[in-house]
Length: 155
Length: 285
Image (cartoon, rainbow over the protein chains, first blue to last red):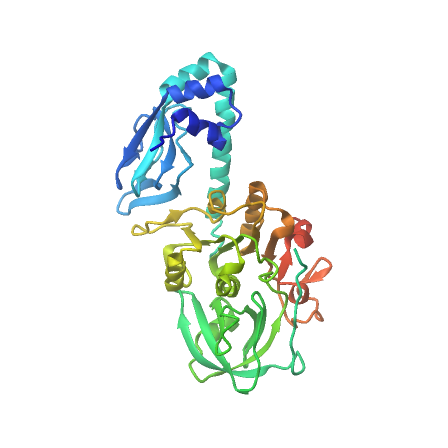
């Protein structure tokens, strides 16, 4: 059976579209395929954020824990979604739990390594900032719509 | 894409309600219900096109527009689903089998179900907006072979607010229908998607170059949905929205539902996006 390499995965993904082949190679070199069983955690709130994920299969819930309420799901992410930007921003700690709701296959990218490369090469750093800012804007917009309680009653 | 047409069909004066009896009324969610009506005059024809609405009159309380939510091919039942939120709908929610209502209609334009033949279909809806789209889905499924991929994307406030749960489960079982549901706020037992309906568009399996999109929900949701569909590459001439305004006469006389140069009751409620997109972004309208 044909297995897609990480390079091929990146070339085909819109998040990495247009990046220089050398950069793709660099990012792919920092990538590692991982597998999580349902109810397993990709990240825990407060822990060091030293990676980000490209979800290749399955569903991941971003959760917050509140005393007496159990986990609250803020958002779910699916195949093709990028998970995690805390690796890029100080204090480099995960802000949410990321729990696999199903079997999840994801490619994890070494954030510490990439952060160092971004510091060395600010063009690369700017590319990462722009691309992660795009994800953050989309998620912020979606969260704003969620907060509007659009489907609530009018009175 | 063919222009939408509306087809008011009046045996009588369009302002004169016909009497209908409540055959059954049931709760869909905590604040929504469906009422099943049958005409007192058994010979009355109540055929309608998907997307049209009726004016329902609770005697002594008031008259309101409600979209028809049943199967257009089923001439034994006239269904309306609405939320018990105002004086009239709250009074309506208390009706019992055998109680009587006044009904005028059907009014307005319809979803372009026939014109969309041969294309992929994307139905995007939120909250109670699933009710006016359900007749379109029934009509599409009745002639499923005439369409490409068919995708239903539905957003609800919470899992408890999901309309037509059993039917959604049945639709999910169709191998030729993609159903994706998301909620704004999850409960602990919810294992589905969390997030707004617009987030489902990006990964929904349809060909944007070919798809016809029909959207029904709160206007803000429809605005962002159209943006997402346009971003995905769906041409605005193939996007249709159902608008809601304060409708009184339902035949374009009173002017309550004026929307720029159009009346939502007569020229809508279903509009091609091209016809209304500027107005949707005009605050004063």
